[in-house]
Image (tube, rainbow, N blue to C red; front, side):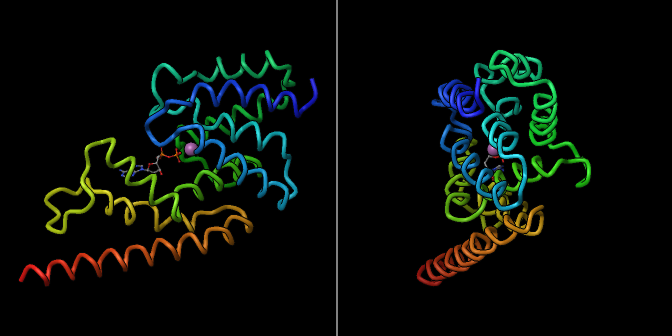
Length: 207
Ligand code: ADP
Ligand code: NI
């Protein structure tokens, strides 16, 4: 099978599985990560085939994904084997999706350039306008509120900006992703400024 057909067939299978995923990992998240990852890979002279397949598969073994969709690593290996992906490539892909999904604290130099790229693409999709949308969608799905200025409830969506989103810009691995992260990061900052402004205006109106 040629590489394009392998990717097309695996994509078809995975996207069908993720059609009704509700934890912020719907098939459009996978598709955005795939596209971002491929464009970063082209810029960074990495192996595009490994990057693209890893991006398509990156959330398939994630704990947060619905049980009916989730596969274990051996099943992913089987899926790749069925599509005649060579052992060398399978091992590279499995290593990437394991390190990304399990959030293993693996050091930078343990992750291949292809792995770094998929991680960057996944992180880019967590910031900017789309990242903001995903944050509120995730918060809603967990029953968290938008914001709680009294901090009685720190499970609010705005907290996630400070816990994670604002830190992602400095965690990008590749120069290409660092560059792409800048605008998205600025948008997060502007969004928070506007949010605070509107929030304090409504507080004043109350007085
Ligand atoms: P992925 O594995 O695709 O990078 P995660 O599974 O960590 O993403 O989270 C899915 C989405 O939900 C991301 O956009 C992430 O920023 C967001 N998210 C994760 N945890 C929280 C939280 N506690 N509150 C709000 N949003 C969250
Ligand atoms: Ni993801």
